[in-house]
Length: 79
Image (cartoon, rainbow, N blue to C red; front, side):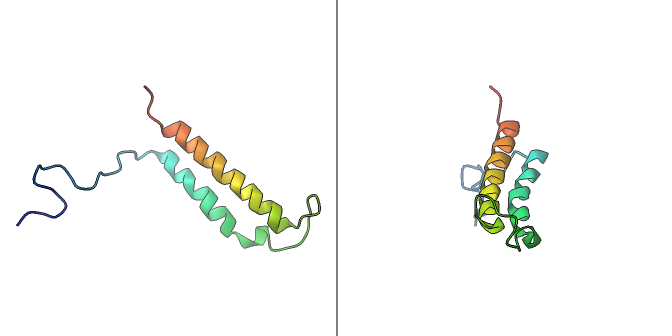
């Protein structure tokens, strides 16, 4: 019987990630920073009348987008 991960033509069934760039570790920042609850576990300071929790959530979105953009730009293949 043949191995289920390798089809009959010999090519691997699942493409392995070839990009092992250290820049990819930066993607953990927007995942871990929102988990630090003491950052937003209070009511003040308020920004435009919004409590800390709400404007900090918007800041986390900006952090995620900017981090993803930096990682993409640093790891994309140059032509």
